[in-house]
Structures are given as C-alpha cells and as structure tokens.
Image 1: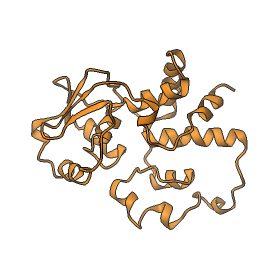
Image 2 (image 1 turned 90 degrees about the vertical axis):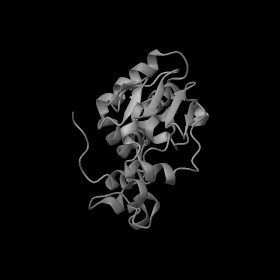
Image 3 (image 1 turned 180 degrees about the horizontal axis):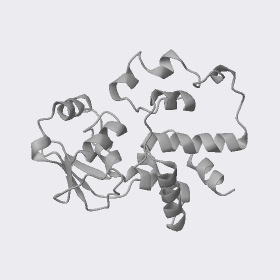
Image 4 (image 1 turned 60 degrees about the horizontal axis):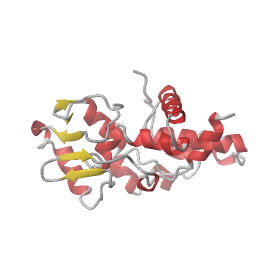
Length: 208
C-alpha cells in the first residue's frame, strides 16, 4: 500500500503547526516548528496569504496528516460521513477517531499515531480476542481492544505508557490500565476531539 516516506517534519512545517508525528521529538527543542517556523522549500518564507480555497485545502491536508490518511482513504471517509445521519464534518472526525491506530494512540500505547500504526501493523493488539494488524480498521461500540500478553514487556510500549500515565483517555474508551484492555463504550463526540481542526472548511471544499 502507498504511504508517505519523506521527512514527516516537512508536513508540520507546511501546515504551520505541530502535527505530533515524531513522538518525543515534537515536545523538544529539536522540533522543526521551533527551529524553522515557515513552510519548506526555497519559497517557503515568501508565501502569500491563502485564498478561501487555499484555506479549505490546507484544513483538509492538515486533518489528513494528523491521522496519517492517504487522499483516496480520506475521500472514502468523507463519502461515508456524508451518507451518515448528522453533521457531515463531525461524522468525518468520528470516523477518523475510530481507526484502530488512533485508538491505540489515544490509549497511550504509543507516543504518536505513526508509532501506533506500526505497533498495530506488527500484530501487538487484539480486538474481541482476535489479532488485528490493520491500522485502518474501524472500531465499533462494544469492541474490546487489548495489548497481547507477549507484547506487554516491549520497552517502547512500556515507556509510552509511563510517559502517558497522566493522559486521560477520551470518555468513549473505558481503559483498564492494569489489564492492558479498553472497551469502546460509545462514539467519539466533537468535544472529545482536541485537534485544532475546522471541519466545516473541509465540507465546503468537497461541496464545490
């Protein structure tokens, strides 16, 4: 499957804010936004103000990059959101939040979504007792996500859990830290999503 393989810090610089794609590095002075707070490329420091279309496009790209979703995947999710009942923009964010890699990140098993995607891909988690290694799988209410017993001593996972001990999981996830399991007890609501995303701009973009 296609995936982004270039320096991820360029994505943060292009969007002009931290997307938290590099884990610990994003919280240090080595963060690219701290060192070079302008878009990449030879014309990065001379870019002009975006048009209305440009603002809408940037919001879509920023949201895509937050969740590590390809263009075709994002369009698929938008179509799903548009067909579902409710507000399209909120439906879109709800779908993105329900991805397996995002759930693992939200629970604190990883320091970034790319790291969570790798852990899921390597088969370290189960859903309802069955191994799941598809990061894009959508988790439903009632599902139980668990860290496999053989993976509980992995240093990277243990360190992430320690560093994220103070992080409070969203209220739609009932996390038992001692058992390394979490049950999905609801759906993500807009108030549960702390990302600086203006989803109405994405809806406007796709409505053109």
